[in-house]
Length: 277
Length: 250
Image (cartoon, rainbow over all chains, first blue to last red; front, side, top):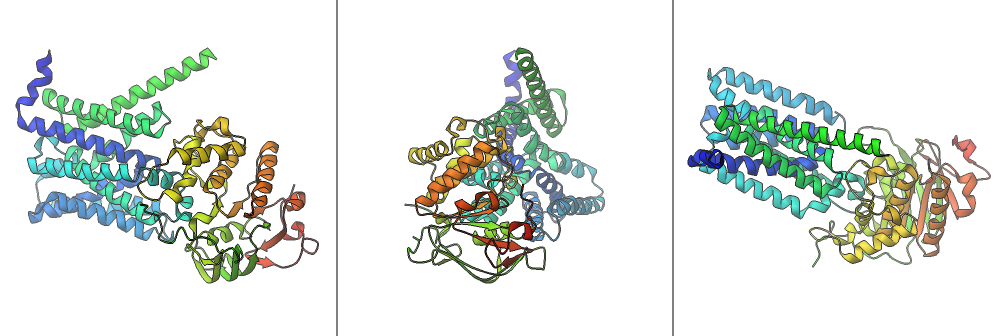
C-alpha cells in the first residue's frame, strides 16, 4: 500500500513538483489570509489575469517567463493603486477593467503564435514541468514573503482592521499597501507555475475560506489555511500522477473538496449546537 | 533599540503651548474640489474638555481627520502641543465612528485594545506583558474586562464603543478626539463613557467630543465649538443653540 505513496518519487520531476506545489500552497495560503481579510481577493484575481500578456511577450522574445509575468502583474498592481489613490475612479472599477484589457491583450498576442499548447500551459499551469531553477526561485520568493509576513505581522493586522488608526500613529499605510501588492504580485507569479493564470486566485482564496469556516482566530486561520493548502498540493500532484489529470486543476479541486468538507462540518456542528440548546 | 513608525513620533509636548491651535484651516477631500471645512480658527488650552457641535455633514469628522493627518490641509496651520502635524503621533488619538472599523476581522478584544501600544513599539517588536497589562487596565476602566477574550465580531454597538475608548486609553494620549462616542449606544455605555471622560479630564488631558447631544451634557464640557456646512459659527450656546444648527437632538 505504502508504495502508492512512494512510487511517484522515483521520478525527479515529481519530487520537484511536490516540493514546489507544497511551498506555493503555503505561500498562497499565508498571504491569502491577509488578502481575503483585507477584501483584496478580487485584486488577486485581477493580477492573475494580468500576468498573461507579460508571459506571452516573454515567450515570444525568448526571455524569462517569470520576469515577464512579474513585470505585468507589478505594473497592474501599482497602476491600480496609483489610479485609485484619489478615488476619482473607484478601485473596484479599475480592478474590473484593467485585468480584462490585459487578458484580452494576452489572448491577442497568443493568437499570433499559433501554438495552443503554450496557451494551455500559461492558462492552467504545469507544476510537473518545473525545473531546478524554477524551484530555487519559488523557494527564494516564498522565503522573502513569509519572512516579511512574520516581521510585519502586527502592522498587517492593524492595517487590515483599522487603516485610519494605523495612519494616525504614523504607520506608512501607503507603503504597506504597495508592499502587500508587491508580495501579491510575486506570489501570483509563482502560483502561475503551479496552477496557471486562471486558477492561481483559487490557491489564494479557497484554503483561507475553508479555514474561516472553522475558526475565528487569526493565528489558527493562517495555520489551518496552510495545512489545507499543503493537503491540496500533495493530493493534486498524486492525482495528476495516477489519474493523468491536469496538475493545476487537480490541486484546485482538492482545495474545493476541503472547502466542501469544512462547510459540511460547520453546518453539522451548528445544527448540533442548536439542537443542544 | 527602537524603530518608530515615524521619525518624529516621540516628541514630548510643550507644556506651555495650547493643546490645539488652528489658524485659517481649509480642508477638502481629494476627490472633491470644494472645501469641506473652511476658515477654521481655534485655540484650546491643555486640560480642557470641549464639545464640537453640529449636524451631520457639518465637518466635525473632517476637522478631526485633518488634525490627525488623515486628510491633507489645503490652507492654514494646525499645531498640536506647539508642534506641527505629525510631530507627536503618540500624544493624539482619534476615536473614529464605529462604522469605519472592520469589526468582522478575526481578532480578540484584548488584541484589538493592545493595538493602542503599537505607536510605542514601532516596527518588529511584539507586545510585551506590560503592554498587555496596560490594555487590560483600560478594559477594566471601561467595565469590559470580561470581554477580553471575545472576538470583536461578537460585540454589540455599545461594547464596540467601550472597546474603542479602551484602545484610546491604552495609547495614553494627551489629546483625545472622540467622534460621536455617544451615538446609538445603550444607557450603561453612555454613563461609563461620561465617567471616563471626567476621569481623563481630571488627569489633565484634553478632550474634544463631536456630539449631537450637547443640550443634555452641557455640564461635562468647558465650552463648545459650533460647525455648520463646513464653517465655524461663533457665539455661545445661548446665542446659537443646536436647534439653529439643525442638529437632530432627541
